[in-house]
Image (cartoon, rainbow, N blue to C red; front, side, top):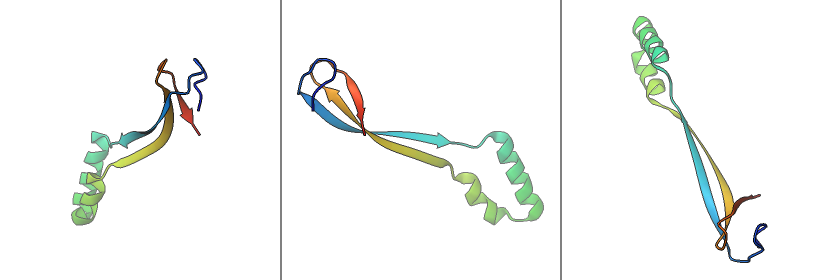
Length: 74
């Protein structure tokens, strides 16, 4: 592989993972707890409240060892 900037062949490949965590807001927590108390479904609702959604994406980058330029590999 050759660097597009400096035309060097000293290029390393790296795997990069991007993690995004989506948390629920305090108003939504309050409404879920209120709903659980009113419907007496507290045992069924607690696991839904404590879980957060995690999304991760992995992509591969090539990094030139001479000039430091990095680019995404498809």
